Image (cartoon, rainbow, N blue to C red):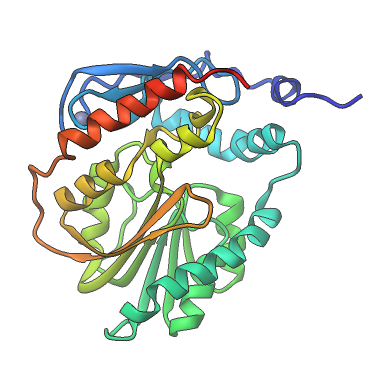
Length: 304
Ligand SMILES: [Zn+2]
């Protein structure tokens, strides 16, 4: 008998309710404390609430699992859960197959900027098994370093000759090094503290270095899914839009040079250079209004 996604997830026995959690009292982007509950559960059926900051439109899980609970989650549950949701195996090997064309797209996107600079080293944050790191490093002839929280994936990255360490960007010790190119690929939505992580990344980037980051645009995700809950997942504590991503970049001292709408309609990539931080940068009020308007439209969309 074929199991449904919900049955496959139930069979994993992951007790989300029992995980240690902490509540978020202030918005990580703007510091505001007026939140709107936009979803009461996630796509897996877990009781995870997503809140939107009324002032800036940042969306985040609240409460959310603690850093230790997330570390356990990435070690044991994340890949099996995503596999159960999709109904086929997703592990370190299948992820590598998907990442190869993605890596070529990232390298193509960066090429015209890399060519004008002295670029000799790369740090890939949340770099998984190093497929993207290796492809970009090979294309531009770079020394490669990587940090990722999943030990099995870091082990595979080491086998590619990458200087790879297990950990998060918050805890990463650069030992005084700076990097000419820093990547944050399909990772920012997994971070617990986006502002501090971006600030740390900036400190690891050479003065004339390049930073690549991409987001899953939450507004686009809501529009692509039948419900807002389907755009929420416990693996993403944070949900960005173009407006909130660009405010984060400005606040933490990055100027974007080019923006890329991926073919899936969902991911938005930015290549950035360093600039002076603008600690007061905020999304335009109109973009915040539009986000909540779109969320309400998805809430009230007739069922198919
Ligand atoms: Zn906010």
